[in-house]
Amino acid sequence: MKKRSALRADTTLAPADEVEREIYVQALPTCCLRSFKAAALANAGDRRQLSLECGCGRNWWITSSLDGRVLERFVTHGGPRVGSGHGPSAA
Image (cartoon, helix red, strand yellow):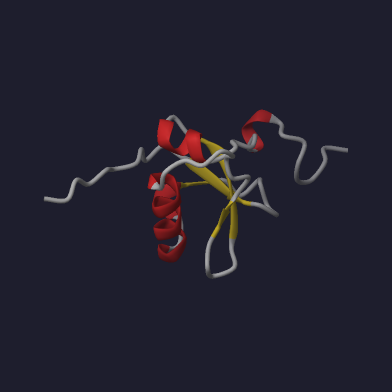
């Protein structure tokens, strides 16, 4: 019997070039969600990934997660709620 692992639904991501457009993992396009699950559940290597790259060409930053498997695989980038310094300036 194959063991299934669910990832926490409270993980948020943002397009790498539009960090202010943060979304929850359930709102990812289907192909990106499959890529995210595969990457998060894969055996961790020596280095964490800076972003999630999907075969469709989209590139996502993980902005927040409480899932240990996600944190082992990806660098977490500050999203719009933490004043990451990315995106439009307040000038």
